[in-house]
Image 1 (cartoon, rainbow, N blue to C red):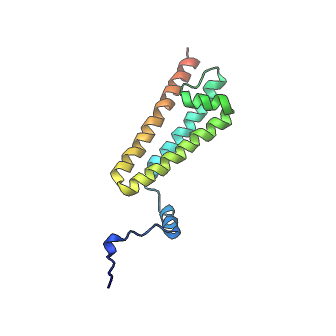
Image 2 (tube, rainbow, N blue to C red):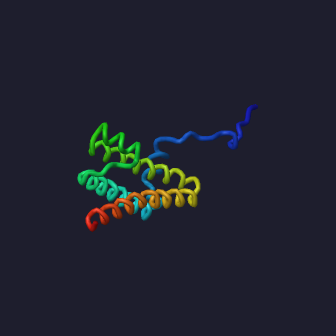
Image 3 (cartoon, helix red, strand yellow):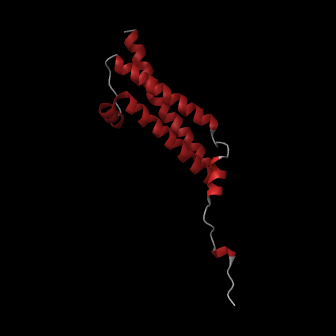
Length: 127
């Protein structure tokens, strides 16, 4: 007689499991809101600086811009936004404190170029 022990069986996730997971509320909605808003401001300010004769200082973003113009840069930046949010959700569901930390770090990192661009524009207009 052969007896299987439940402890040795790991059930594979099903489509129903995946569907249930993606329909759970976002774990860090406030951080995501700030992240998306700051990312949009980053793109807007970058566009304005480019229009005024400035350049994109992020090497990778600049390469995307040179290859695919502003539309490509927009797709690139918001693909990164989506990727970061998905990663925060995945991390947060495993370790909530770590997901919260990563989402906060994403907001802080995204705020930096927004502040820098704002300072550049203020200096440009009031110089």
